[in-house]
Amino acid sequence: MAVKKHGIKRKLVHAGGWQVAKRVAKMIPFGGTVIAVGLVGHDIKKKGFVKGVVNSGIDAIPFVGFTKNAVELFTGDFIPDKGASKKGR
Image 1 (tube, helix red, strand yellow):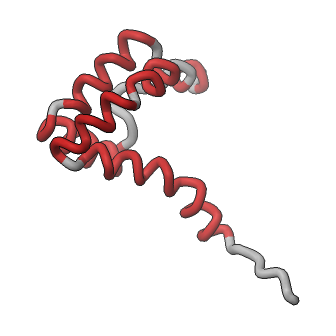
Image 2 (cartoon, rainbow, N blue to C red):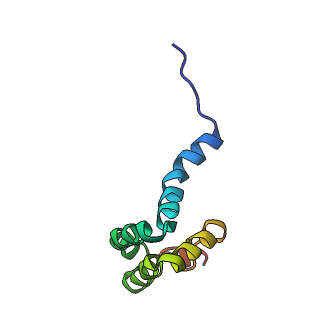
């Protein structure tokens, strides 16, 4: 049996798929609120307490969170992770 090798494009899609899936799920108006509340701990761990709570709070507002996440799909996070600001130095 031959071993099938995956191309770089497939590997990137597979690796980033979960991140995109979380963002898309957050964009569903009221279901996204439930998901955003469930991911508060993850946001706090990545962004710090205040920034994580603010980010999750914005995501939990039905149509505001939808708009924020739609824009972030193309531009990146509005509120950077706590380690991301130090990497640029």
